[in-house]
Image (cartoon, rainbow, N blue to C red; front, side):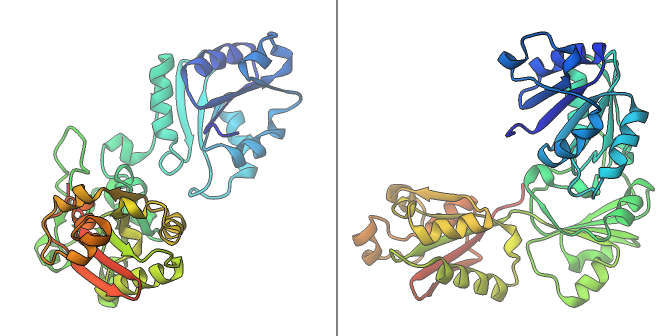
Length: 363
């Protein structure tokens, strides 16, 4: 199934509510016991099953990112217990009572998206959302979801639990943000006093005493910084690096990748913070470039020569203009895509590859 959600019901009233939700929630597949069939299941794409729902739950867990069960909470807890694996991989599970009065986030509230799904479903069917995750109830930073709406990637997850405990228990917490979107605090109240922000690791002294750290940077940390910040900290990689790339026709992926990786390491930048690759539209079908972007999941953004020529560059090339119609490729592509005014790396030529790097300004 390509849909992300599975709706499951095993009682008469549960089926009624599940069918209502099925019509309101795009991206859902509906399953219920065949004894409640109404004759329109084939035309509506509804799946019927025989026997205990326990038999189909392992398959649903493997195929869906969210599972909504119109079954009592106690029964659900007993049924899913044997098939739970890990909070990073288990789907979000939501339980709705037989009358559709309460929608309860049961499993994987953050990483699995159950809390968000619970709120959405409750709004659709007029139910009361029941969410018990401490960070949600207190309206504070959800450590395992921090920056997810911006595409930030967690690099060090080992200390997520004790760091989360520090946040919700109102212990001194420092947020070290060197890059990435700045508008991550979106609650209708001020940032709590026990959470302090600094813009660089060097500025930690101004944060006073702290028990846990949230570190947002595209920079590779030194061993000393890792020891200090990540002893009880979580490291996030914002998508703040844009690679402007030009290359000769037919350049292999391996050559482009080697230049990119070596240059990022040389500059002390994390490859996990690359947001996208930018180039001229003449390269939109460049096999090696496309293969590189596919491997790392990077979008490839292309611009026409006229669009690139709108960006002022320090060393326009008549030779490049002769072949492409643009006075530069990697430099203006990086700046335009990042929305930056200057480069971190203006241009590096290596073999068949030209690379420029720009940093996306913090939001």
